[in-house]
Amino acid sequence: MPKLLVVLLNYRTADMTLRSARAALRAMDGLEAELVIVDNDSGDGSYETITQKVATWPEASLIRVIQSGCNGGFGAGNNVGIRSGLSDCGKPDYVYILNSDAFPATDAIRCLVEHLEANPKAGFAGSYLHGEDGAAHMTAFRFPSALSELEGAARSGPVSRLLRSKAVPLPVPQAACRVDWLAGASMMMRQSVLDQIGLFDETFFLYFEETDLCLRAARAGFETHFVRASEVAHIGSVSTGMKVWTRIPGFWLDSRWLYFCKNHGRIYAVWATVMHILGGTLWRIRRVIQRKAPADPPHFLRDLLLHDLKALLRPLPGKQRAARSAMTVAAIEAKVE
Image (cartoon, rainbow, N blue to C red; front, side):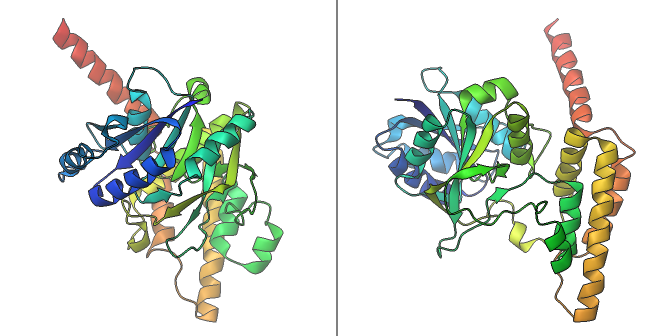
C-alpha cells in the first residue's frame, strides 16, 4: 500500500482547521497515512489550541502539529509540511495538501490515491470542490496567457467567444480528465515528481504558486488530472479574505507579475498587462453604457498598471530573495567562524 502524507495548513483558523483535520482523518481511514498540521506563524494561539485538542483524539498517534517559524505564504507553509516527511523520517509516495476550510468526503483521499496509482503519467490530481450548499466551485483551469488576460478582463460575449480556447477557468468537468492546473485546496502530488521539479516556489507569497508548480510539472512531462469522484466541501478565502477585498492586495499583483516574468519573460509579462488593460478598458466602457455593477475591486486597473510599471524597474522578487538569503548565510557563517 502506498504511503501518504497529508499536509494541512493553518493560519489563524484554529477551529476550522480542527474541523478539517477531523474530516481528513475520516478520509484517511484504511490508508497508510499520516497527518501533519502546519501552523503558519499565526501568532494568535492557534498552535497551542490545535496541539492541545489533537492530543486528546484517538488518532493522536497519526498527527503531528508543527510551526513554520515564519509566515512565508501558502507555498512556503506547505513546503514546511512536505519537508517534514513521515514520522519515521522517510518519504511518502504521495503528498496531499488540504486547505483549512476544506472538508473531504470519506472516500475523497482514497479516490485520488487510486487515480494516481492507475495513471502513472499523472503527477498531480485534484478534487471536485463544492460549497457547503452543494454548488460546484471552479477549480480546473488553463494556464494564464496574454490572450486569457484580455478575455478575462473584457467580460464580453464576442471577445469570450473568439478566445474561448484561451479562457483560464474551465467548465466544471463531469468526469476525470486532464487539465492544465488545479486549485490547491485539495491536491495530491507524487513525491517522485516533487523530487524532480522541486516544491512550491516560495517567492510566491499567495496566489499563482500552484499554477507555477503545475506548469513546471507539465514542462517536465507530467500531467495534472481533475478527479470528479473525489468530492471536497470548500468554503473558500477564509484565511485570505478575498471575498471582502476593498483593494487588490500587493501580494496578488506581485504573484501575477512574477508568474508571467518567471515563465514567459519580462517582455511577455508587459504584453500580458497591456492585454489586461485593454480588456479592462473595454469592460469599463461597456459598464458605463449598460450601467452594470463594478466587477473588480476599486482602482484595480490603476493599481495593476502602477504596480507593473514599478516592477519593471526592479529585480524579480526571486533575485531579491536570493540576495537576502546569501547575506543571511554569510552572516551565520561569520558568526560560526
